[in-house]
Figure (tube, one colour):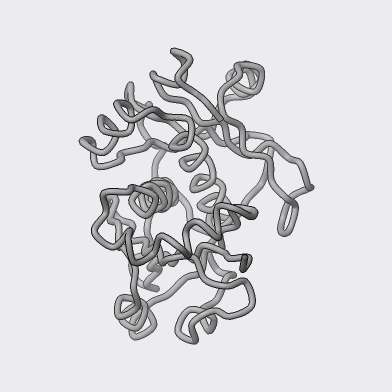
Length: 220
């Protein structure tokens, strides 16, 4: 099987960049939207998704603006908007054979910030970011996508249906040090990075939390 990578593109216009938290949550929601077997393009993308999931679930986040973004919209994919952020997820592509309009986009330049601290997370799914790591927004978006995917894999059909009914809404928050320590030992799904960029291999980046995962539905 061909090793594939999942492309995520975040829209970053010079005059109006998105809030960091919005971009992370849009990335998580975009990944869930792609994985959903009920999404309308799933049949056409199923082989590519299966090949991707059979290897490492690598994700690469690139940025686009203006004409670049319009070209991205012309490619097969799903666009997710979360408040100030727009993220488009595309079906997985071969590691060494990206579509031209995606391969030409920049990976760097995704250092986004929040203009104010995000509110406390609600009672739904939360992806907790490791407070001890310094990641660009692009890197953190990929990690949030991984966390959402682990949570999806660990959810049964009733949990997935409830999540779908919420539009796959998923909060992303940075954990406090004490909370992080507890989460890492909780048995919840943990993302450990392969170490290709920015951080050391094996670093725990995200813990995925949801009410049904805490009830023991987690199966992965």
